[in-house]
View 1 (spheres, helix red, strand yellow):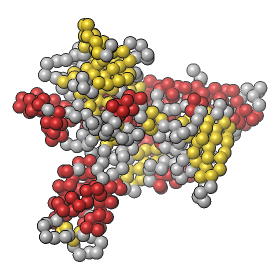
View 2 (cartoon, one colour):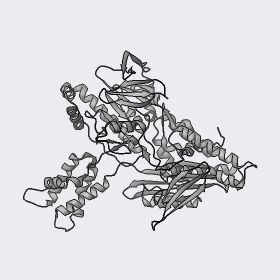
View 3 (cartoon, helix red, strand yellow):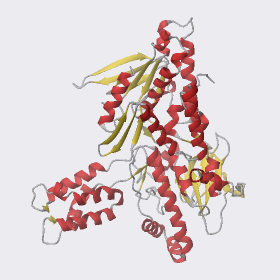
View 4 (cartoon, rainbow, N blue to C red):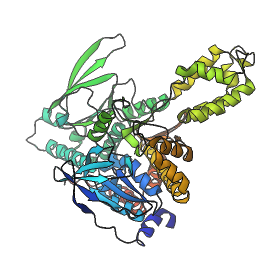
Length: 567
């Protein structure tokens, strides 16, 4: 119990945060400058955002390592994997929220409720604004960007008629809409055709969020609403998932995708694949289906509710930063960072990005085939021996840290790429090997566990750098001599980030599935699978408080069912 709640316990032993003030008479580009706490010998660390990456960084930071300031328009952290549960009352709103000030208290940091709207990379300052009110500049020595991303439209129109599921306000709005539709559908004055439209729920996107929302809606109907609404109304309910790929949950193993489709078919949900939404109206939705023969057909279906749960694109602040670094930031969906999560294009490496707003840059090894092959074999030989191959794998992993895990795994695969069996790797076989490694270097998925691991890595890395500079005056002076020197010192001091996939979960309505990678999967269609899924998320909570609230919510749901009131 102490281990789970030690952050809350330690927070009570610290002094309250200092009051933030403005620098007297100081202006930059017409706006005042915030006087943030700056202790001698410490760097000012500014964290943008209060999501998984930002919070994981804060929880990993040591107290006293930095003068920390968090800037976010939301003064709470949301446990996003459980948002679908919130929409139907399985879990209450407060149970998935943790105040950012409570998390920040342990590090004795400050919090500003505002959004970042501009950045001055030369002066190292971020311009913040609260809901269109006064703006102010916040100085930093190191900046962590964890502002997340926004939904991509894919060219569809009418998104103002859709719900999204990213914030607690979204979940509350969805909950109210669901109950309003059911209450309107039971009115005796509502026409039959209108009832059918009201009770048609469409999910655009067959990823984990869309599928889990559909599953929670199914549970709500079969476990709760059936006791309180007429059977004729229940039989009108229709859940439709529109997916652009040939399977839902296509980022997971195909075995799980097929299992999910079978479960949804058993629950009488409609899954429409190979289809793209064209437009959403107030009462209908149009989509286009691509057939195997290349032909396309357009369809229109009535709808009383639409959830938009598709891909991600740059948030306004991250787009602005990429525009300022347009020479090197070419990705249209995220900020490009190196293997140490440092934003590409910032000379001294003082700006980091993580989570959904960032993507780690991977090398294209095939572009360096000649250089790599020449470094692997001895002069006078045109092939690589087994001993040379082992040395090459280690040296290449050190040179390309973002590909290290895949390169090191090659050490046991010599015979796999030695296709002619002569005990040596030729240039053609070497090319095939590099093609294989390049195919494995895909962008990290937009998952909470990715952002969480990045945050923990960055927090520990920042702790180590603070110790290095505080204990070694010569190193600190060398780092201050030039941006390049600082970047090189810190790259040497902190190992590159390596992502360890711990499995992807999906709840499917009285069933659950998990993909652990490399073909290892779990599927279950029983109560045990449901509570196994819940136990994983219970264990991942950021505080003892939310663990206790979740346990009580699940107990209430088991004993009394979900709350069906509209508020």
